[in-house]
Image (cartoon, helix red, strand yellow):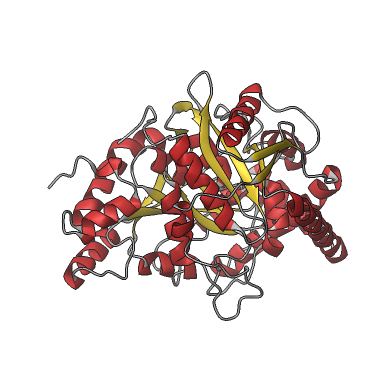
Length: 481
């Protein structure tokens, strides 16, 4: 039976219908499949379909009957095609070198998604190796933004964001090594929180990636969905090299709790002092004014970092981490990487990453740890830091070209586009992008709040307050439902 109202519900709303017996898991899976078939030819967001697996899981859930312990029982979602390993399903990371290589077992995060009752219906596209802030892999072709098909959906979780924004699923897996949750959330008008470092585990085999730059979570249309998923997935597992600070109570409870009067800093220029796009400035200024109306103390101030030194250190760890990723792929598939099987930009990163010496790498990690100390001191005074998520609204497709072989030169344009988001990967802090502004030509413009290390709670309280005060749920993109 068709369920026409499917896309009007968030994930918790759909799960409540399943729990009440108003709709069956199989019906929701079929609704998601219908929308994939309808919209993916236009969006190019899903690169691997898991329809048989999803239908089998839905049938098993129905056979077990109502299971109150599964918060998202019956809810369809999507896995990103990097990390997010699902036994028997290929994970290509958007590159030819990994095509046809199926995962031997589930990642811990996927196990926890399953335990929460989420049903994976496919895998979403990503730039090759998750490298760029736009999702245009040569292997699969560009992913299109549902708000404007000529514009980027962001990256690297662009496929996940495009699918959620279009109403295909209410939420989707994403990961973030320099902004890859928050950038596509900003581009597609979604909620995207990068949790505190080590809040979600990377097991069962990996302890951390790129010395803690990379974290995982989801993109969603509502704040409460992001909070509720994190309730289901967070927590260390045996063997983790370190863990995030403990939480006081469920994140979902925080969303419904009004924040106390907060002291919030805001910045409308990049960390390097350069200006950002006027629409991004406007987004921050309008939000700052709204925060004052809500009773918060707002002050213009920025995190005082040696931006050049931090960027240099970040790039050393980032490029070495990507080189290690490619060598790790080689261990998995038993083949030797060659330039012909990678995009020129990716191969440039691989070659540059291999040139980072062990002492250089450790010094870079130490420099990023110094930045984390500076951020911690900043947050002794400020509860949150408000900035644009990006330096400009979503860019047209083709703006950043992965076919250029000099990634260092390409990176200048990349960092100009995303001047804020790598900072929180370097410091380990949580940060959330919220869809609080749209440009004059109808493109989403995200604003980002950065919180203290380990303090997602304050971000969820503030995000819940802003979602109620400045609702975005009724805004719909060109490609929808």
